[in-house]
Amino acid sequence: MATLVAPVQHSHIEDAKALYKACKGWGTDEKAVISILGHRTAAQRQQIRLAYQNLYQEDLVKRLESELSGAFEKAVYRWILEPADRDAVLANVAIKKACPDYHVIIEIACVHSPEELLAVRRAYQLSYKLSLEEDVAAHTTGDLRKLLVALVSVLRYDGPEINARLAKSEADILEDAIKNKAFNHEEVIRILTTRSKAQLMATFNRYRDDCGTSITKIIRNAIKGAGTDEDALTRVIVTRAEKDLKVIKEVYYKRNSVTLEQAVAKDTSGDYNAFLLTLLGKAD
Amino acid sequence: MAEIEALIKAFSGHGVDEKTVISILGNSQPEHRQAFRKEGGFFAEDERRFERWNDHHVKLLKHEFMRFKNAVVLWAMHPWERDARLIKEALKKGPNSNSVIVEIASTRSSDELLGARKAYHSLFEHSIEEDVASHIHGKEKKLLVALVSAYRYEGPKVKEDVAKSEAKALISAVKNAEKQNPIENDEVVRILSTRSKPHLKSVFKHYKEIAGQHFEDELDVHLILQAAVQCLITPQSYFSRVLDEAMRDGADKNTKKGLTRVLVTRADVDIRAISDDYRNHYAIPLADKIEAKAKGSYKEFLLTLMARGN
Image 1: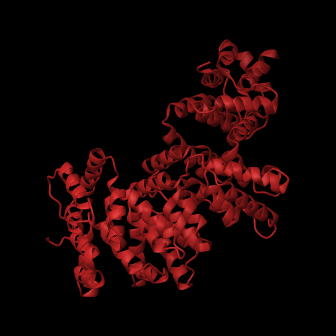
Image 2: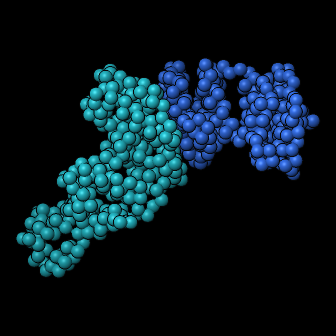
Image 3: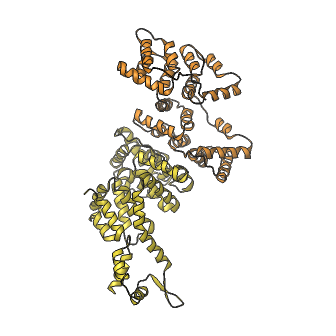
């Protein structure tokens, strides 16, 4: 469930005017920016952007980029883009880092539905004049490249059909590969990067039934992630606020015994802090 | 007898010359048919003293009669369903049909290939990449999975310095062919399956300049790799070659299907350019060749597809 709290009715023209006022002159009224944008759905945000463009002949995104700074600016920038454009930006940033953020690519590739991933790939081409897989391939090597390129290129079948016998035979393959610590095993990559999500779930369940442990734990430990905490925090909250952040909050609390809000409060400050908390559903 | 020869001819080639069959066989008396059975080569003397249809020939005839129907059904299909079904058929037929998968994955536009992938979901409840990855086992597997997964950028922008360095990587892969087959080389697969087509044209232009010869003239390069390169940068020559091989005497069943497949899948796209390439290469207009090798309604259908809008 989403954590975003947004009014059902709003005037995007009023919002655009209010944002213009907040950015006018010296300094910026960040509170106003947060109180408006932090309470609008994706569709509403795009309407506001359009209204702003019509009223002031300027892209709201560019205006905010120049007015805001730091982690707050990054978060708002990610928030105001359309989801597909946003993920394309996130992917590009992740790839171009001196030490590429592989788990961002994995996250984008795996969390989305096939159609959503396709939208990200199109947005990537539009923005960067290259395909996503081209860039991923050119910035990675070896087994990681095989895995990542396949993950971003696949158009998984999205139906619910499961083949139980196939689930068993592929669970066996995974078991063998894990026993031999062969995570680059061609078959492991094939299974993870081509099978439908329903089929993979069946395979993982079969694995758990046969081996007693969850395969996701093993895979998580095997893939080392090294993004900065700030980026990851922004990314997860901004991309999931309208989807399932509530569920993520619950799981987070179960696993860490502190709420996500408390963790955010502890590690962030100022406008950035306020913005994230707003997205998390805190009442103003 | 001239008539028996004419009848045999009506049944040989691509499709069936229905008019000849009707006029000769339809007008025949029992003794004419017996003569045909004794001399045609389609029958064998059975031990119980009658001329029996050769099962093999009946099958061949079935295929020839079906050629027109298959062409029509394929032509009416949505291009996405068409490509999805062609890929599925190629997967079923085995390694000799891998070139069909290369052909479809590499000659379609990014959105056409995407459409085919979606249609495949609907038709077969699996993704193409899933089925290719699990059904193909040879050296070409890596490349094929990558090719069917591609969603290439289609703009004209090319970075010449990148193209040049990628040409060098290809040259190096070919030089090292003894240690590793270039078709399995990660860089080769990456370049061929992710780069845009304009970029690839530039890559192979640099290849020729640096290596001194065209990539397609390199020996010891896996046929599938050669096919992929041709399909990506000079599809019309590739298609005219497929057509020529399909119409060669003695072509096998699968190769013959290339005639229908190319004509039907390219009639709306670039059949004219393919036609021009064919005439330049083989010194005879494509339509003339089809007139000579195909028969009956099948022939008329193909020629009509080609002549549309003329």
